[in-house]
Amino acid sequence: MHRFAGTVAPFLVIVAVSNIGLSQTTVNPDISVIPRFLIESNDGEKFSQGKREFSQPDFQFQELELAIQSYLNPFSRADVILTLPGPDIEAGKLGIEELYATVFRGLPLDLNLRFGKYRVEYGKINVAHPHAWPFITQPLSQARFLGEEGLNDLGISASILLPTGDVYSKLTVDLLRGGAIGETAGISDTSGSKPFYANSARLMSFFTLTDESDLEVGLSTLTGIHDPYNRDRFWYLNADFKYKYKPSMYTSLVLQGEYLYNTRSASQDQPLVPFLNAAGGPETRTINSSGLYIYADYQFFKLYSIGARYDWSEAPYSKDDKASGVSVFAGYYPVEETLGLRLEYQHLKTETPVAATAVNTIVLQVLFSLGPHKAHPF
Image (tube, rainbow, N blue to C red; front, side, top):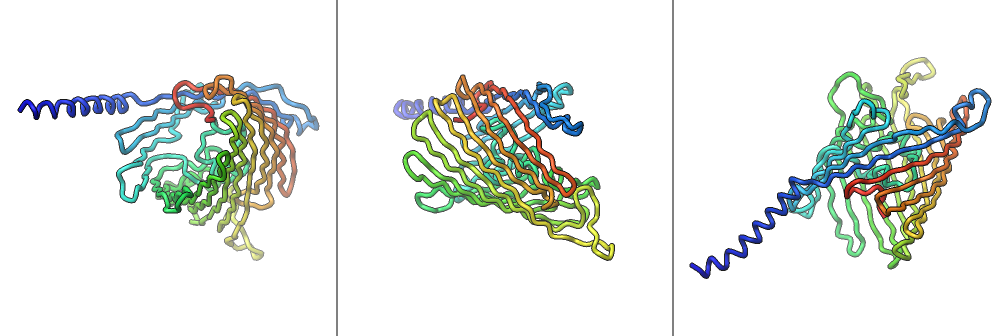
């Protein structure tokens, strides 16, 4: 009896300590706060008056992000991302940007499962929160085809690692509610009808080129209903890459880009104007358009970064509505990941069949992080 007790006692102590650790993880999640502030000036506000001069700098509260994250158990974790956009600061309207759980262990075939509201793994930049970008402004193709908030929807996602040897490859498939596109690059449904589901998939591979460099490539697709009244469907095809060269701990070069191709059947354009044939009757048109971005970001002495980005994009409903831009940006992170200052200059041109405009914008961004969810990853 004493021998049995001596054997069991250490085991009970280990179990008790493990339970205490798990309880602490579950009861006390990681909480982070990341606010972003802007000072912006552009020369487009007075252009209609025939003037080309920069406006008085405008101080703005851009957004506050509150992240609550924790492991639920050894097999899953939960993430809650609440945001307070600048325009809603006085009203104090916190919104749910993401709220999801991820099961990353214990499923057949080492399957990973995610469900809730989340940034869909479509392309490369969509999953990154804006505070983690090396620049300030959103790439044009992402804003035009996915909206200012990106592809963020209610759904369920399954991902699996593929048996590709030394090459890390992953396939992710999503079933989405489908409302995110209607609110951005589609037509909003105000009739209260049932949701039209969307589907997304991404195949990515990660290659280690040398001890100092690696390459990630990906192919994504997204399909859904962009016009709930006529049940017109769209397809997005996306190719992305990210090359990183890191010769030392404090120096790195990142090259990243994406190309998005859009094809859709449309009975009306986004302002709800029906398409008509030569006889004046309704017709359904096939619209093909595309967009891309590519950028380079060079980090040096750990605290500094400089880079440039090129954008070009057509519109979801027109090849004749075009925009292009060139941006140069710099970053300074004096306290590593917890505080950041970014400066960006952007020259943006827009062209439509009736007009063409060009605007220059200078933006200074200040952001900091309270908690483990850092403002800028190195």
